[in-house]
Length: 557
Image 1 (cartoon, one colour):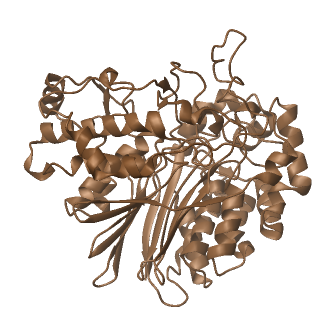
Image 2: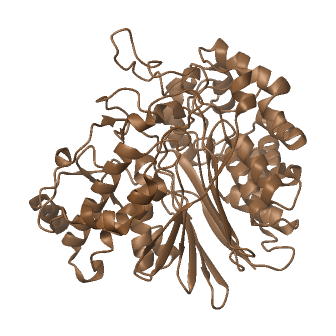
Image 3: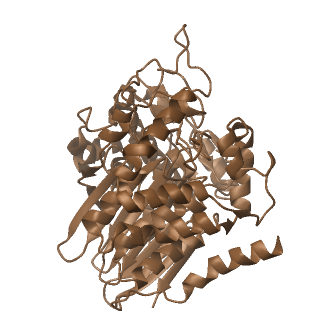
């Protein structure tokens, strides 16, 4: 065991010797795991650009943080290319299988069957991560895909030392994982939790990554790999077909943009709700001078902005390929002024008084994020997910791929609340080939002097975390402050302010309650924000990784 641990320690340090572009550009990377950050710098040192580095970091996280993302999941990559100002959102969100239907998780009486959309093969949507890696590499990178995937393949083959955060997440899903032999063989030690700093090796996943490196998207979505995935999923009760895999396509979206007190906000467009809800909340808050209000009133105003923006998420947002979304109206400052007119500084508005037919739906918190920027301003913000810790808990034998449980992010039944209680509407109903709504919020914040890149995991609380960080940026603070901001959250339903222990003082709790708010303390600190910052004037870089996690932020010289 000592020899194995020593090997893992070498893996975590050897790649830090060279942390700069081969062409001399400085770069900053913040990710949720030190090995993923190292993978990004390794590819930069080989002559890759920030987009190649993003491929490397994404793939590495799929190996070393299997609790949060992976080839069996999906996500969003927000890109900016400085030479021509080009910006795009790569939408690699999963899609519902073509055999999916609205009643697939309901019993004969029309009631939701507990955990059917969370656990096992039927919970898995068609993954977008492999297609996203190929697309990002081939369209925006400089290096061959095989080069950018090399660090992840090595981590999977050689292994790495697992940490306490990983073990905490594994403990949460251990009983589920025990039900699936292929998953248990990878992550458990003879059916039990492994010891801290044990070595996790994933040779099947290394083989799958190698096939992707050799054959591009065909290495996952067709041929022998597709046959194996479809056969394994269906044997376990899923509904995948080869057509599902072969027809999956990445979508490129125009990011949503807005402005708040001299800051340009660029963020994720639908199928993510993140950018619209973030900008709408900031538009509402733009009518106040938050720096001149007392802390109780400030937090009340922010909460009321969250309430109204999340309410619109419920009513209007879903997959833009399937429904018409009133994006211009939701982002319009006059529309925000109308919402602001119902906001009283002395009293909370009960959520039940807001209009619209709603339904409740959860969203998993165990996602991941990384941020990259170079001194020229090229940048990537990427939020990736398999939904709940270890996704559906199901691995098709021989692939090493943990399948997502993102089907749970659809709205299954009006009025049903489970999981994290996130509200969803008809716009987010299950349909064949449809992308489920997300809260992932990879974001750029830009002023005349600075550019920030940030994002976080956290399910429905992602948007409120990025909102609080954006407001902290507006106060003039830097990345170390944004990622550590004490967090509180309101998502319209349930009608309650959830806050981290210590995030609100006793006086603030009393004051907010006096305004009519219900409050509850979160069971544990949440989020794992990763942020980087460019000073345009002197091209200096800074970066920070949330101390709630185990990530690493590095500026290469």
